[in-house]
Image 1 (cartoon, rainbow, N blue to C red):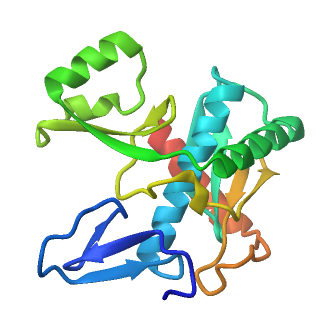
Image 2: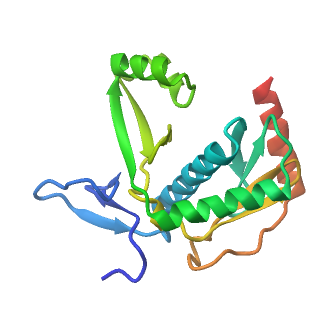
Image 3: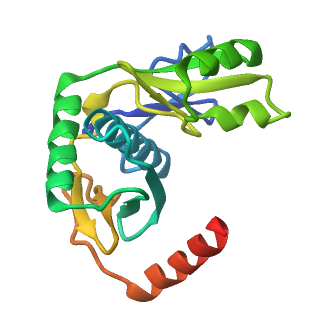
Length: 208
């Protein structure tokens, strides 16, 4: 009976994906993107779709997802010039992925299984999990033939992330998404040069 599309749920106050099977007696609360948890899941889903689109169109691009700016996330390509043509091509591919309604599945592997997987795939996506001594497993999210590591719950399908816009910005680009107060449309992007400068300084120190 929800007015908005449900993207995830809480079971006994723990955020779960929509393919989670509650146990008898668990208290279930549904989440749309007007909630803080729901919006975080929406953004994660968008970033997965964007990464998948880049992987198909520009497989050699070193994509970095940096930080949030006014209902948007700032990203950059470390080894290629960001052009308007690139932004349009990726945006169009993202729309195709969303319309295709691909499943997003979490795959959990033991460390041994993960080592064999990475030996075969020759990729670094999510590989740092192998160095985490506090974890016995490695998890990846798969969408069709694309996979990557994301921390936190994800949508179960690409169909949920319909509202977004990619725009060239500074030396990279931003991916915009709705505000929790109005989840039906994009709000105007508010540029904040001082915040950007401070975040960029922090990023430069981190890179060094």
